[in-house]
Image 1: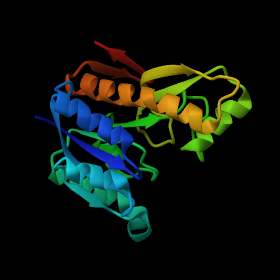
Image 2: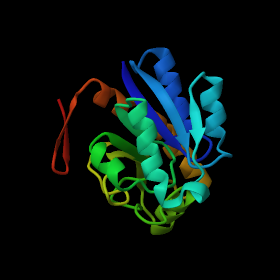
Image 3: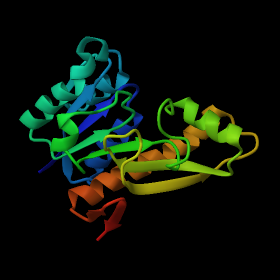
Length: 203
């Protein structure tokens, strides 16, 4: 069975979309562990309600050792793929080497627009509206040593309307995130992706 570990920091709506797609049979895999860098993340409760093991590794406590602690857990659990779903800590070190092209992230914009340092949550959508773009969306990409710089797997677009607020745009993009992330997991679980430098090819 293909095993995934999901990293979260907050409410866990993307985690819920993965849980729902596992339960429906769309994803033939098991959520082996959910790891949060916040003890107060509602996503922990979502996981436990679904019978999934969940653990909190508070970033204030673990600091620079957080990635190493995550590596210990996912290695012990024999996780095949790490999914960062609204995870606000930056992964680094040995974890990135051991899990090269086996960590994916969902970002709420069409990378390379509105990404990188400080671009998370409503900040992304405020930036998109302020810039005046007509289209935004979400991106699933592999995680590398940079911030939102890894090879792109899937992008889904949404229109941006003149009367949008950041909150309204966020909801529209989030609907697409809930489609894109399970789709990317399915492609990887079924070994349908090839990575050539920055290009990700679907077999």
